[in-house]
Amino acid sequence: MTRIDAKFAELKAQGKKAFVAYVMAGDPDYDTSLEVVKGLPSAGVDIIELGLPFTDPMADGPTIQLAGQRALEGGMTLQRTLDLATEFRRTDTTTPIVLMGYYNPIYSRGVDKFLIDAQTAGIDGLIVVDLPPEEDNELCIPAQAAGMNFIRLATPTTDNKRLPKVLQNTSGFVYYVSITGITGSAEAEATDVGPEVARIKDSTDLPVIVGFGINTPEKARNIASVADGAVVGSAIVSQIAAGKPVSDVLAFVKSLADGAHRA
Image 1 (tube, rainbow, N blue to C red):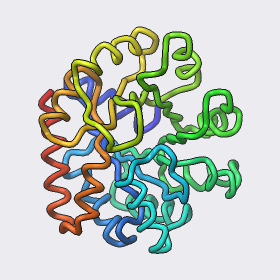
Image 2 (tube, one colour; image 1 turned 120 degrees about the vertical axis):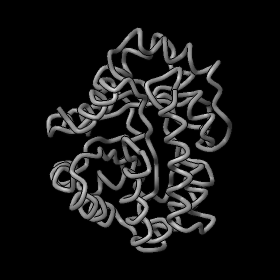
Image 3 (cartoon, rainbow, N blue to C red; image 1 turned 180 degrees about the horizontal axis):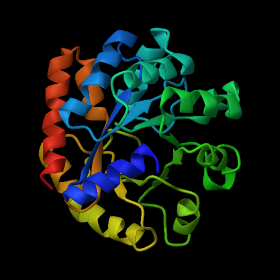
Image 4 (cartoon, rainbow, N blue to C red; image 1 turned 90 degrees about the vertical axis):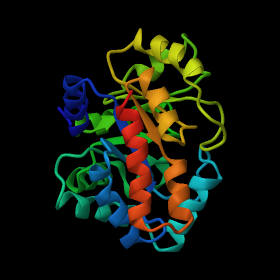
C-alpha cells in the first residue's frame, strides 16, 4: 500500500473528501517553494502535487507555464525537484507526493535511474501527461513495479470506448479533468462533473479526483461533493506569482481545503 492508498483509506474511514494542492517546484525560488510545500499539510492538504518544471508544458495554461519558466530561470531541475522532496520528507513521512509533469526530463535521466532516485526522495506517484496508455511499458509499468502509483487523466472527451484503456494500468486515483482545454482556462461546474465522475466510477474502484477550473472554497466544496476530492493548482500558483507572503498563500490554501472537506 502506497502513501496515496493509505491516505484515501484514512479519508474514507473519516467520511471526508480529499483536497489535493498543486504547486510548481522551485517557484518563485527553491527556498520559498520548499517553505510553501512544507506548510501545505498543516493547511489541510491531503496530497501534494509537485510540478516538475519543463520548457514545453503543452497541457498547462499561462499561469502554470509562467511558474515553470520562473522555476527554470531560478535553476530548478529534475534533481533539484527531487532534492526538494527529500528535504520535505525530513519532517513529513506521511503526506503523499505526486510528481506531475512531462516525460522528457525523465527520459533524459533514464527511467531506471529516475525511479530509484524518485523512490529515494519519497515520491509516491506520477502524473505524466504526455504518455498515453499505449506507452505504458515506457514508464507506467516500471513505476508500479517500483512501488509507485501511476495516475492517469480522464477528460470530458474520454468516451466509453477509450475509458477502459485509460483505466487499465492506473493506480492511486483517477484524475478527472473537468474541462476541455488547458489549466486555468475555465471554471468547473458540479452539474457537468457529477455525471462524468459517476460514469468513471462505474468502471473502477479507484477514487476519482477532479481538477482544472476550481478556484474558490465554494467551488472546491461543490466539486468535492460529486467526486472523491478536488485539486487546485492555478489559483494557488497565482497567489505565489503575485508575490504574496507564504503565510497568505497557505491561508488561501487552507480556505480551499476547508471547502473541500465540508463536502
